[in-house]
Length: 96
Image (cartoon, rainbow, N blue to C red; front, side, top):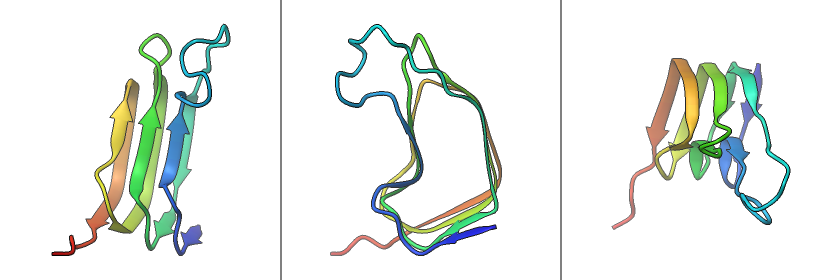
């Protein structure tokens, strides 16, 4: 069980588009990720996953997670077999 007060970006972040992006010879591989029992009180995003079309993030499971006071919708690009089991996201009110 993990309780987090606040994170600057995303509670769960996988981002292949760092530094040189998709221009390097190395192809990152992310698969079989399990995140369970996480409670976060404030974040920009709940989940941010950006993978390459040629190398999608595969078999990602979030279970029993609560993301409260989230500013923006999840970012999901090139994700295969994403499972959200008992995941709750509560967005913060936009200031007028």
